Amino acid sequence: MNTRGRILAELAAAILRLQVKNTALVAIDGVDGAGKTTFGDELACVLEPSGRNVIRASVDGFHNPRLIRYRLGKMSPEGFFRDSYNYDLLKNRLLDPLGPGGSGKYRTAAFDHRSDRAVIMEERQARSGSILVLDGIFLHRPELRNYWDFSIFLEVGFHISIPRGAQRSEGSPDPDATVNKRYVDGQKIYLRECEPAKHATVNINNEDLAEPRIINGSLTLS
Image (cartoon, rainbow, N blue to C red):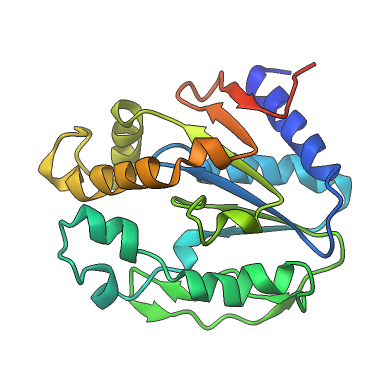
């Protein structure tokens, strides 16, 4: 088994050991281009053979409408950090129903930022012992961090994350490009104010996708 597979197996084992009521809430955080979605998909695949129901979701299904996202201006880093997501909706539709005392009736998305419209999605019922794997930026903000039973922060420098993201979106690969200022500087506000690496259960350097490294946390690789 390669390093990436070994780390995913260790993470899955730690998550499966969690003793929680209802659904285990797992967050995968990191800057844009850190590899969160791929990591979350791979982690879900490793968890599924356990027989536990794995719920995959992304914070990107809970954007604010365009009018709110850009109220401070389309180039505003502050606006990117403060106004991108509707956290009340995320809690109401997904996190609270799956948490302790919740009904278990959840939706994995509520808003499509591309069409700027609400998403009409059928409510689902989580089985007892389910595991939510949620990926996205800004997941260790103060209003969210206490929800997580287990959280992962993928550490990737902007010199790697921005070119990686540009391959996906056809944007500029230059972290200092004007078009990237909103996103890079907005995420710097998050890193400075919220210190996600300090609050995550495990921090993983994901700059080398084939050879990620655990920086610190409660895991010890065998």
